[in-house]
Length: 318
Ligand code: TRP
Image (cartoon, helix red, strand yellow):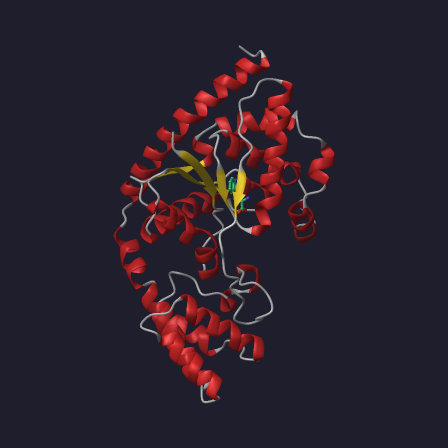
């Protein structure tokens, strides 16, 4: 039996270089391991817990699929699907809700952060978000969940729920671990002490779809105090080609590196790094996206249905 991994990425709109390095790059890299069975999905139900425009939702989900395919997620190696296409996620979530102590949810720091940021819409879904995530995870009985630091607490809750279920009913679930990959912290161009985030404005982020001109434009406006310059040098290392980073570092150490040259060189590195991505992205048809998602749904459904019938049996529902 292969080791199973599962991970999700929210459909929040355009992907920036921080999102790419934080998650998708690892997803792509993990495709090289023949010992893994991979489930990657878009948690569209989770995305309903904050305000959204229904007219944009499909577009955002499908655009994210387009990005993932263009970045190298290969549907022959990874099962790529949309959460709401597999209704067992919601069904298992309900059952897990009946096993989750409120005190566990009260501990969740992401809920506290989000509740503070969305004070006008603190809904029960936002509060129970980690329980749906536990269902996402345990349905596939994975060994590991590649996630960022901010999701570790949620993975711990999945383990608590798995243990509870196993003790109370029947041993069905593994107790999976978060797989924390080395992910560099990419900082905002405008406020280099903060993480790059759409919420700080488009000028502070470089989107993967930005063309060379707009990358140069944003880079030119990047803040270059001490932290800012370090951030830019760090990015040059991440997107390095042909030893450019070494050259920049040497010039920086010698005190001869002009900010404008650092910015232009870095803009070129990033534009080139994603040039293939942008070209491939244009070639992916809507029909291809539909086809890939149907393959992913079929594979995920088969696994999810099997787990759910075990769960129903263990609970005496059948
Ligand atoms: N909460 C995760 C995030 O915001 C996304 C997510 C939902 C997820 N369900 C998951 C990640 C299951 C891993 C496994 O990044």
